[in-house]
Image 1: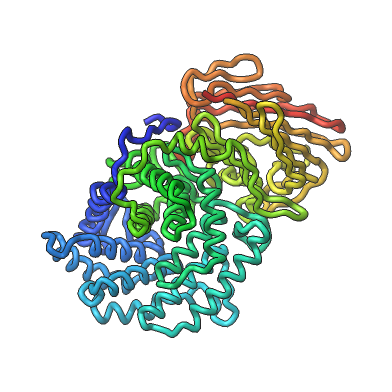
Image 2: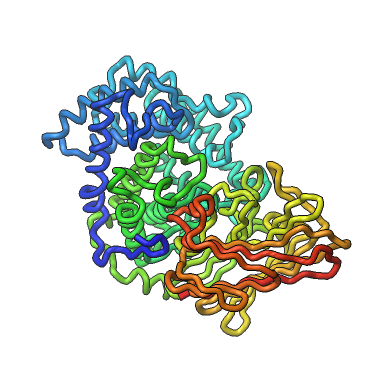
Length: 600
């Protein structure tokens, strides 16, 4: 399959049918492997339990709970699955488990308890060990309720663990109530007036988690048998509207931020399924949201899953992801995605849709109901944060005006560029070495500057057939450190124009004093191929990008195919790498650079 092409199935099936025909057999194959080989299990050539994945034991547990509760008890496979599960749960009870792994394991135990299978699936000694190990206090300070060096979405995980411990009869409601209050207080404090949560304590890092978090909180309430508060439903409704803006008829979801790929798709799936379950979507929105979720599940099967590996593929054949989801977590990532899809299928069943064939007019409905351009605010203040969505010719672009904050500010998935799956993607953990679609300035003193983090004065307007976005920065980000560093030797104004089949970006860099420039460059890792240089740009024979051109540079180098170090993107290998470079050695006047992308 060509990396920039994915066609959804011609005819969609009900989500429940897809789950039973595709996902449950995959899950069963993993349990057969684990039961046969135990601690010595290998998956795609690597040992499973010697890779340091502290989430995996919990993921195995929740996968087992799904398999046992979804397999009829008169099915010939049930008794063997139950006996093998009992052996696996005994192994799991001896393993180190942390944070999300604890939550998954507790969800598994609670599901088994409610199904009347707990004692049959988990022996008494294993239950006692798990009661000791599955505790929120491992990653939260018990006295202050502060997270131990984790992002803010883990507050919801801690609350869920405490609440599940209460439902299991392991502790009273005191901790869960305190953690719930802490969670909601933190959400309100750092989501500000716009309702999307900063992943940091005010640094301005927003990504898919910022949009997903309200749905995750609601899921914790549903899973732990609490009524969802009106405020959470209000936040969920807002997230659902933004999720619909980002959704494509191919099943594509969010395309920016860390740990993306299929999780960008399932992030939208989780939001929409939860919103439908809680009644915050109207009837037509629910029908079409269900259609999107079926498309995303089919995309998992047809695009992300590799039958030769019997695994989701985030790592091989030119695909790449960040270290957080490295190959050491390969089996666990399969359990994660399957759990998300099975859980959302349950929500759709509760909403009354999971056995229905989805409507076949999703593409037309999205074009008709969703804005072709929208500026969505995340935060305002000294620096501003927002997300722009653009819908054109069946494609969806998301342009995040955010700050990656500590550890992410120079990584391409957080750049202020128009992401679109299989068209414009950011290499995970890229650093600034090959900055995707941003002008990179290197000064004579060795400083490397990127226009990523200090965004102000965001404005958007319509100019004829173009949608225009502009903003400024009082300085550039001097990269090389763990957090963004404001360098005021160069200020910047940026203007994006979105026209029919066309996107352009114009940057005006203004030195505040005479500046010695060592290099100015622009790069584009592209899925199109058959490149031929024409004037200041390149025409492509094959792929969605028809032409890319840049002004303000002196040289253009084209690599087709690129070297292996430049190829790996989220959906697959780039096919062409463009490198524009050149600048006057000294500058005190404004310098304007522009790129234009034309797509089919």
